[in-house]
Length: 310
Ligand SMILES: [Zn+2]
Ligand SMILES: [Zn+2]
Image 1: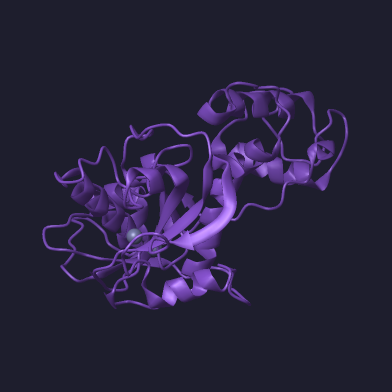
Image 2: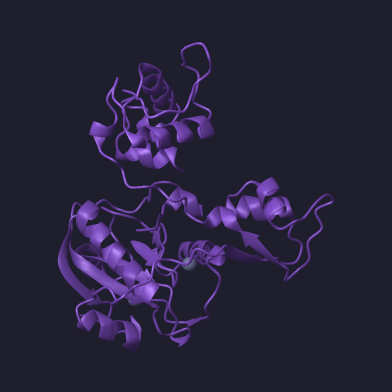
């Protein structure tokens, strides 16, 4: 699942919405307004604007974006209020307390047919809410028990057929994403918005000082491609004094990330032997990484492995 956390798309890390321990199931929604297909680099803008719209809605008095999660046409799952938070999107207090609410970025006009990637992302979101949010197995549409067209004919038909992953879903495209330059954009402003280093953005597009760009110019955004993480080889690959090919990969990551302080006096060398130096360098990486700081034992687990490759 490609989960875009609240912090990653620019919302406060935790929603102020009321806590709830579990949900009966998940209700699927759509935007119910005109929507056009867009580049993925603009999807987070859309999510931010939905949150602004909700916060400005005096009639509803929303404390946050109303949805539990939102799914774009490219299959990314944007964390809305998130797990264990009461939704505001299902129509009334009873319905909000009953089910989570997942909104597809799909229109009632313009783009009205869900992509396979979107359906796949919706299933990702549903499974995530079951796994991490104690959601029950029921899946329905906003219109179930409430007078609304939401989530539209196309999506509701999919829900009625069991909300399944589409057959033969292709992996996401590996071609670089593209950003279309807007009026008054600068390289550094775009880089900040896309969360990539501006030097890299300039370099991959062959733009040198004075970094002139033009409205409607298309920029390649290679930084948006998720890094490829090889499968975790298991903890048995990392035992002090034992050799394993995965240690070569581990060493590449440590060297690439600059964690090479511990060595035998000749600089930290790449090799397939997991040494005490390797373990200490991994421990340095764990101490330097917020998600891993709690247990810096120097032995890579699945999360250390993933973050080392990021
Ligand atoms: Zn709805
Ligand atoms: Zn997208």
